[in-house]
View 1 (tube, protein in one colour):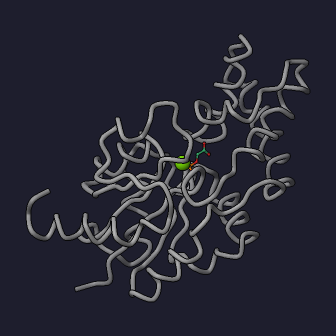
View 2 (view 1 turned 135 degrees about the vertical axis):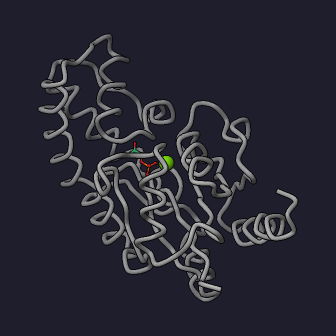
Length: 229
Ligand SMILES: O=C(O)COP(=O)(O)O
Ligand SMILES: [Mg+2]
């Protein structure tokens, strides 16, 4: 059987990126003369990519954006973000050990994020882990972002893996919907960016630390092969 594939979401799952994403949002809000938003707002603003973050951030300040204005702000947001991508951003505790464990066990590992592909690759490189992943997929890689299953399926295929035997690890309802639409099991961390507690959104398992990931994956995979799913 081909090596199984584990596909990770990035923001709120592998890395705590909220400080730098909210920093870039606050840069464009400030430039428009609007108040800045606290980093705690990240839970309800992140998860659907940069354009959605800007739209939601401006909506929180009572502003609707025209498509043209949004594109202009997105360009400035992205330039600021890419220049400050790892000021506050860190991998969550236990991530490196988990990546080591799955690599040693022969898994293919990949990323499927709603970040832009270039930003995701730059960030993973700065965090010293880009080489761990067989494929890194962003919101622009296949022309559509999560929750459409296309980027997840493309990530698995791009990694040389197969849907059967693949699993998604995420932090939000977006990741759960994406995994379900692609027919994959999904495990969620409970410390990421979602305003509704992730346990209420129906993942196969919830973990609170990466130390719990190997056991959770083993349990979910055993359930699938025994047909109890
Ligand atoms: O950039 C975002 O809003 C979310 O990205 P994610 O898909 O890695 O959580
Ligand atoms: Mg996420």
